[in-house]
Image (cartoon, rainbow over all chains, first blue to last red; front, side, top):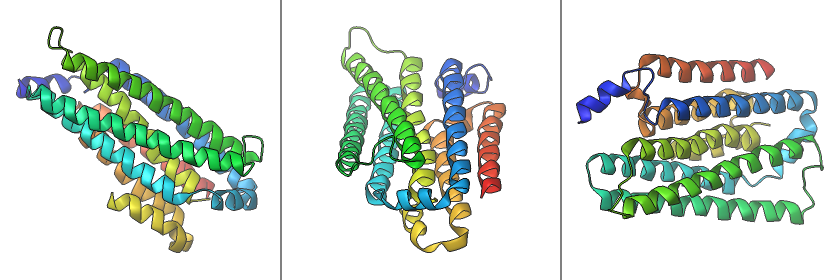
Length: 194
Length: 66
């Protein structure tokens, strides 16, 4: 089965997770990259505003969130691997950890957002915060959608009557990893380099 | 995880090498997630070329801006 799967992955039309998801992933990555480049360009024009605003961000929470998302990605990959080995119990356990870590990310993000709002740092504060709010809220929406997908997958794995297909699990996992990939671009650029 | 903590610390001491260093760490993590977690190292080579190409273009544009 594993060798057959690898042969399937070798076909350009059948990457892990499915070609439709990968078209979506690439389009999303290109969109985020475009906005990040625009942000960097504006930072080069107004370096002081961007630097001063960047210093107001909580790098510690950002770093913890990066670790949280990377760990959730690890558990997601472990869930897919366990499912391929027909160990549904392990797969559902790993999936549960993934969901819990995703919720942890959202809680930390909420704490960060509430402190920003309390300090009066909203989307119309300056150009840096317009980009900050736009990019991070858009990412949070992806995380929320990803969590809904994972919860649906989790309930389907738990149901033994109508098992989930491997492709559906891989597609859900790919979307979750997309959230990770986006954050891996957002965190250094928004929180560290301006 | 080590790369993440390094990236977080580097913003305070890297100086003029901050942008290339932080970008390099981010790209390493990105490739790690895409190729290992998403199993793209098993995918047809054009997908890996697309991912690396995307990262290359993104990095070059950012470095040119800086």
